[in-house]
Image (cartoon, rainbow, N blue to C red; front, top):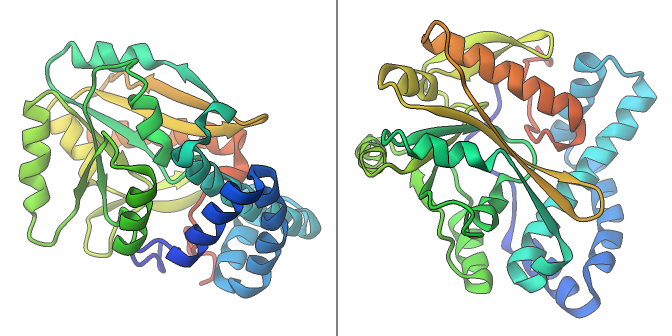
Length: 292
């Protein structure tokens, strides 16, 4: 993962424009505008476009033309996911349906009184976790452990529009203060959520085969879970047709109880999700070092 800087792309102006369009003209009009926005990114976000192209061309073995078409579909789907988030948090939640697939595993996990670790990835729309956990279908307290939740100005702007979430945020810091917050959360039987498919430059990593080619994954979440005997779930929130979102939660069942075994199982679970929802994989940079 040579090029990821730990920052997510975005601008307050874009959010303001889309919130205005949604509130004034409706969600379908916003989707229509997105047709042209996705086309813009194909030509003016060259590095991202190149990365997505290689993702389809080399990982899925698509033809050149099919890969190009799927680059466009990926940008468009990514845009829809972002619009859905804005629409839901701006008061249009009734337009959407939510499916809780495996939510029972979260309560079973909490019954062990050890806290818990939820492993996800930059796939789907986990930013909607607020709306799943705020549904009162579980009493769990959730902490997102992130490197870059969002640029502060975007975060502050969205909070003015949508209000604060019940989901907590723990930001990884150079001074390691996040370790104390994570330990405190686990002692309180709270849940830690890691998007374990990315890492920062100084992090220790393992190389493992993912979609047929070597990629690097951070060691931290996997070591934390196994060494402290913390129960683990694999979780994802995926967009489906007709304004429907599907929450997946699957338990990790250990046989060897080793960090690398947990990583292997995590990758197997993630590969299934990526193959089922190929346009919802959102790592728009040289993930497999295809450019070198």
